[in-house]
Length: 188
Ligand code: PNS
Image 1 (tube, rainbow, N blue to C red):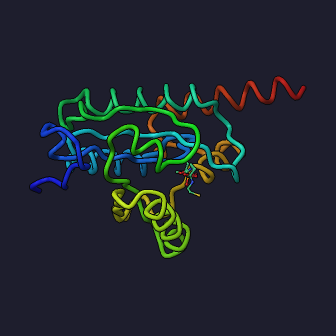
Image 2: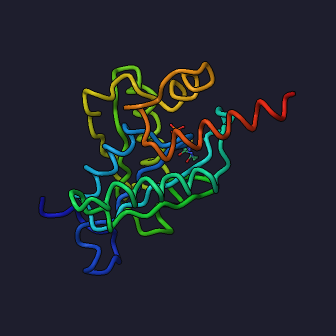
């Protein structure tokens, strides 16, 4: 890939563009990691950005989610098979379009699992374009292995004692189990 046009006024170093992959990441799953890995190869810098979804009550704090994403990126890049050195985990408040502009990001990346994701993502992409006409949204089709996977399903499985192998990295399942234990202790 020859690179996507940098934002107007961007530096030549931005020639491969800064991409932003926003989400709740509550918690980060293998499906997210697949999108992170593929998107990181398409841009100069990839910001994995935790935003606020007003519709969702989260299991993890923003700091906990940032820690998990950072650990997962470090572990995934550590075996030398993937170079994720251009990936950074960040958090933002307010509108994604404003955060993207302030970060110099010109492309929003989202994963699409099925038609059911499309309507919501299409609306988000158009709203973000309305807010900033220099901001493009691109979609990566999810790896077929992960079409059924979501953070909500992971939490549901964990809360009911199911196995998380193959759904989230080990460092994430450890944190989920610790969180559930803590929640149970607090409810006793
Ligand atoms: O993983 P999610 O829950 O689908 O992520 C949604 C998120 C956080 C990317 C989205 O809600 C978001 O961008 N929130 C910030 C506010 C915003 O810009 N909304 C879009 C315009 S209404």
